[in-house]
Image 1 (cartoon, rainbow, N blue to C red):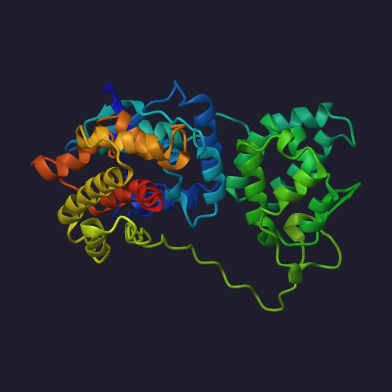
Image 2: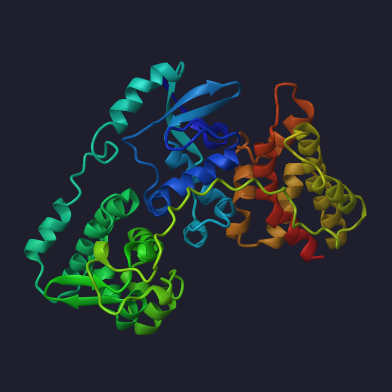
Length: 429
């Protein structure tokens, strides 16, 4: 099997990823992975931001025309895409955390990949990777906590955190997200978690009671699941002890965590898995949420201040179904970008010399002198990497290159990436 260093812009998520049911677009694939991985994806994105990709693991890909489908490494590729464009997580439970982590991030633009000739050739290696305990991670989950249980003094913050994690481990035996995040937090941020769970406001919010028999709660596990996942994901990724050192900091942080329904609180606390519910009827089994339909690209963009032809073209574009007319939509995205940039240049009296890429860079420097605003990370990536899906050369290719075939998902991704930049031009004139 050959291997090669490929640009992130050449890589696509696998719409047939075994982690979820088959989907039809890249956007839906991202939403499915977010729904499947939840806070684990936050931890992964944070780790990639801090350390880069694991040098011991390559992604495995198969060729798809001029691009490559990632058959092994979709979580990593999704994390990179979210760091490049946190708006891809919009309206999901991890949106706020991803936006926070993506700020000032410089995710990798190249990835070492093993190139398999087809799916059958890749299947053997994928089975070896995922057939073992913990998705092949080779970790026995409770070794870390066992060590801490032995060494930590009763009453210490670490001991409080261990008791809390023990309660979660027992209360969510089938929740892989919580089980894996427990290991991460126990290994990296035990005292940070201890500081948080010892706070009276934390105990009140989640109905937690400490006693000789361990930690109990006045809410059922289902009522607490979303909040517990967020807390473990945040502390396992980028919330450190300095972020929750004071009472006010902890109060501010806890306000961002989902609360359990107050009406479901029981009078007496119980072990998490046994906590009584206030409901008198058998609760309905929760259906797995279907992936949201992709929104229309540039639907909220307003170029009224720039006016003229660009505003008219935008209005026509917003009425399109980009999945039915992807080529026309790609043409119009390029036209909207060029006309908006040129109109902004005229309004501001900037130099109009140079190719479109040069003019975009000149305008970006004007609205973002620091060249670090997270909203324009994807635009900067496109300027720096000529092979990126966000590159100006990609838009040119849709117009001039017979081998470039845009689809609706690609057009949506490019448009979503450009929208904050275009809106900033309109707002600045």
